[in-house]
Length: 204
Image (tube, rainbow, N blue to C red; front, side, top):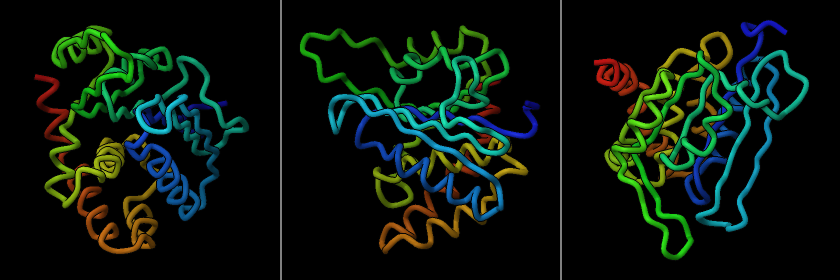
């Protein structure tokens, strides 16, 4: 199977960060563009706070699950989860990370510094772009929309060009009730426009 006939997107985070909505919006936008898409979700034990992984496979694929080292891009809503699922990356994988660190629901856990986690991930040699998705979401109108900021950044990376169109993602979001319709479209556009600046900053 040729890579240019499909794209594997792994979206990771914790419960309550909107990973399921992220995957649903992306999948519906691909379908609007006439592209086949398969998705699967893996939930942690806790409804909120547990690990959540969404597999989105777009194009000529037969299985909904991305194999290890098979992700073209990993979008992470939380830094510890990015480190946890780095085994889905290969030397060509793009990492798009939200600058957010959430303490696990385990007593006595010593938390690493955010900067140390980012440096550890970058030391893998993978192309890594870090955005403050929560801050951009607040700018759009609600921190809850950080998932749409990160979806916008994914589209801004151009890795899904030919598979998913920005305008189709906007069409899917436009079906949401207000005020989320307006807020999420703002968040999407902020993420999209912020990707290039973040990518340039991370390459310096």
